[in-house]
Amino acid sequence: MTMICSSLTCSNYASDYCKKCSHANYIQEQELDGKVYRWEFNPMFGPLFLRKDYEPMKRQPIPKSKAWDAFELYMECDKNEQSLY
Image (cartoon, rainbow, N blue to C red; front, side, top):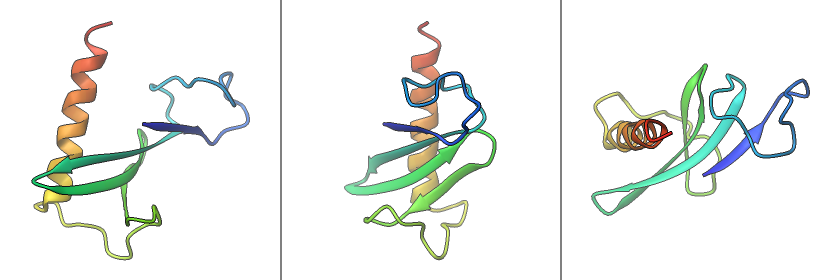
């Protein structure tokens, strides 16, 4: 996962990043049923699904699509990792 801070006021700017920060952007990809889904995720605004070249998709997937299933799988795995600490 790539983490990018978009705030100059963050105390962790340009270093390892706090995942709980509301202005963090995470770029993630997840494979599901042989297809790779990509998105940029912000805890405050949610996911923005991306094309193969990491540019935003012109039309975002509907909630019943496999892209959302992949995102939910990522969120569930992330939640399980956080509970270990």
